[in-house]
Image 1 (cartoon, helix red, strand yellow):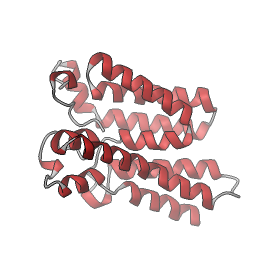
Image 2: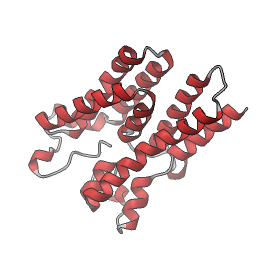
Image 3: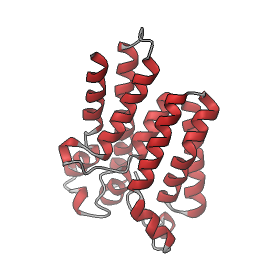
Length: 205
């Protein structure tokens, strides 16, 4: 029974809209400006890089915290790895579809990073380097996010061999692509904003 409460709690923690909260502290409703996204990229564009970076850290940590708690409380459980992964997935869904914002949330990149820094740190670190490389070379945060989401399942499988974590990475990757569908259209039309043009990509975090 406790496992189910942990998953529900993970969803509620994941639903906390840190980008919206920090934007309001700065006097801006991030949903009403820029890309309208509550993630770190839009926050950085609207209220500055410091609050954008803080949003990224908070969104990543809300993916980590429920798994830390689950790992501690379920230390003796034979299905500990599965329940930890489920808590990570629930936190991710909370960010994408938050209860507190009528299920209209962010795109999940920062929260996914936190989840896999906990579950598969080597895979996440390598994927982060790939993300940085793509953004540096092509200038699009969304393209880096899409590439990282595509590669993460394979990296998790190769470096951990965990079936549950690989399934989680696959599901998260699909949802990140779904959430970036507008970015994909703009990329195909060569209309996506680039940081090289002194502007920030449209809300990828």
